[in-house]
Image (cartoon, rainbow, N blue to C red):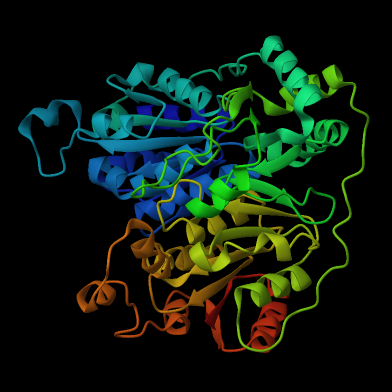
Length: 514
């Protein structure tokens, strides 16, 4: 058995059965092994940032890691934007990165790079395999690292000769590493703070705390004490719709965030970090909460927030309480496209148990309040701020759901150009993804940021933010990738195209002119 076969066998035995790939010469023996060892579903992405983004979306829905196959240091570099997002999302991914044969590295061939150093910037676990008999054991360690709660990036650098040489031995699956125990003193402190200051307390939720079980427990604690609940702005995955909490997020806009948090004298972090601005702005603090607010940590991001909330509810003796009803489901909107109209229409028409991949950027910051009464669904956010994840996330999420759930990708046009090759994979795999391109022909978020940083744009600066010269036809781009597409200029047209797409088994793109 060569190293490549031992690697595939180890991955499969350890629960990794999906590989998102963009292979090259150094990985050909691994590719061959994927043929020779049955059980691995292989999904081709046409650029590595598509591959890493798909793996992120897959984990968010499947709740288990996939592996990626990337070609040497430059391939890893191409995938780093969405690995940044995946790290911020705390997604579990095993990266297999091909590399020069060990004996060939000293010759400094053109593709030679410091792959290990690059991987260390975005991975919590990095290892370079140097001998074939140890490769299986190394792979098992990588999977265990990726599964470490709540999820980690593990990168295994694989020299070509370690892959092709004989003497491979499959590694045995390794037991999971339990998350650090919840601190009972932290629970007691949070309970005391809630009892003494309930109306002045914000419980800021992130990670598993914004999934159904965590929401139910947090609502019990808040209802019993008068505290408020909010979600961190950059949560990767929020359970939303009927039967889930009508959570607000901390606003993106710095002044709006400062205003919304000013009332709270105590902030209890549940899987979250203290809220800070995306950027530093002139004459503006970095923190968004009041300077005199006391920060309490109920659970760190690497601890189980559901366990922490369960212990908190017990300490408070908080009774079970129903999730508030969000009211009637909205009707589809009519007239010219607006953010409110699009949100209402999505809420009115989305199928049960849908998944929303939201990279709407500035257009969609108000979507939440118009979609609380939609059917129960999962909402996936851009978690690290590196644009270009919406389409790959949607693609990976569809695969993570086994192709059984409709995915709705609310997608800004500028960000979509970073990863439009995702459409080709959606067509190849016949995935149930409805992409709604919000075509305003500009980088609108940056126009707003000019004001925030105090800069004064002129003609040259504004031309750098203009995507309308020449105009981009998303219908033609989608059709060129094998995805059926149509343009909408009104909410009535958009609604009809959404209904049509939801009845299909494969992908569909709507270019909404906003």
